[in-house]
Length: 475
Length: 98
Image 1: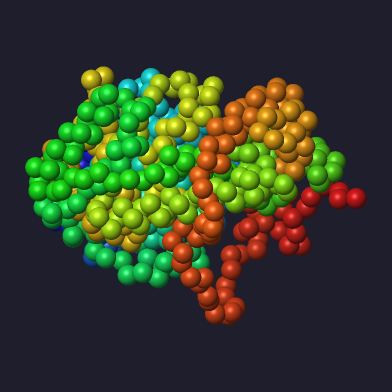
Image 2: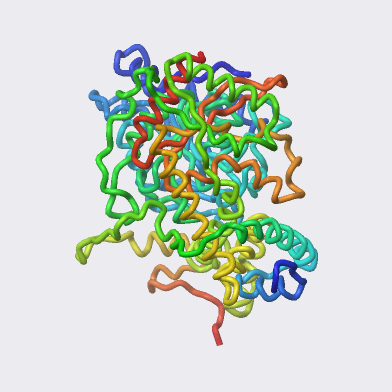
């Protein structure tokens, strides 16, 4: 395993102190990628010249642009960076170069970050292994015969491999947190509405959130703070004050109340994962936190509810890929309708087609009430369970995934097995809640295990303080 | 359609979704979608009597903005991204509709 990346905070401070230039930091990161990404496949696109030019401009401007001045970062390919390809891992968007930046990217760049390139992902973020990318899989830096998780597997692998300290992902059912867990790094899904989605290629609009992946809670907190806050270009971005996150991490967990939904942890969890999770609770207890059992009785429905709701939204969102406005069009087709069908059939991979079909079905006449409406009602019950639980506790802890990173190809034949990788991560987005995965030890095979904490809506401060206190104490 | 699908069901859905599937895909999806829906049947066990559906994950109020004109992205730049954009006349070209 490679050395952990030099942190964003350390790079920024060295640049501010004059012991490092932004250009040198940028070139070092580019060299690491050039030397080691071949067998991993974390990146789909690297903009070497653009990044160096940007770093030089930062060095020339004298005063720091912001809290990420000179920090090299990467962006998941579902998020738009002006002038760089944005395929979302799909053939249908091959050749597309967006003419604008996502708001999250605009803010990171405004804070001084240098975007090196775009990272691989499952097609349209639909998957838990990054194997559903049309451009080939990404491999796990800890064990190359294993997946990095997904869908933000390229971003998680790029951080875990030490290429860059921070990469941005998007999370719909676990796509930031689950790969972070599989790769032994930190991943945050913020409260729904915390980070504007303008410039994020939509998968399921009531669930999608952009979030950071980083080598430490502190770096992730810094990136999240920069990306947070409302913008009129996304009507679902919340007009809530952005609290200082990075500055609130004090390493303390005394008095913190941690809820553990024991009923959800009874079956299906790998013994090494379960052991690592129990040890993490002991670390919290030693810090003075109080661990108690909570009930989330309806979360046992979370995976089916998620796949009914998310596919319905996806079937609508992905209707826009029709060969007219961007990306690819099937050639030599005589009629408009045939052009649509041919373009979409050639452009989408199997998992995306499967989900469009399922979503079309659950929204179709005669089945809407039985599936979509029912799922949205059960979603309300899942959310209410959290309201009850958060009356007694401050955060809720589970493992991030029931197993450590699985092998490439292991779950491709059975979609339901792949979906179960998200069993502990889907409830937070269904409920709009913020959640984080932090590394919590290893399996006997030497694979990272993730600890998953869910917080109250808008209370990223308590969530990140808890995660940071654990990370410091377990170091 | 029920929870067990036939290949004709899958063909009909594919037309609704504007997808042209191969016979192999029809066979694969008929089986897999039946399995996924059978798995999802568990949601029917939840008692949802009188439970409102979630319409927003956090029950946020609708956001309003001023109805004021503002600059949008450049038309030519956008048409340049189209597979068959006619930037000179400001149109997307598509195959014949009639």
